[in-house]
Image (spheres, rainbow, N blue to C red):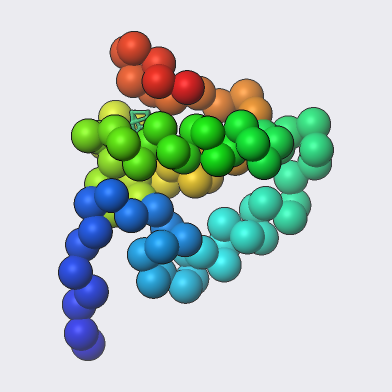
Length: 85
Ligand code: SF4
């Protein structure tokens, strides 16, 4: 099996990992509006992650979560000690 190169600053949606990208879409569809971050806040959170040194191949080096999953839930926050979002 051919290994894909690691893209440190890629999000799941950009990584080519179709299984995880599909799971992300399923989660987005399953969350209620009360639970889900609105689109503009979701994009704001991810744009901060994309500029963060702790992003590594879609995961946050501070907590190990996929940042797109973490950013999707309104109640979740950035785990960095200086809380970036
Ligand atoms: S530390 Fe915060 S901003 Fe950085 S990748 Fe993790 S969740 Fe995103």
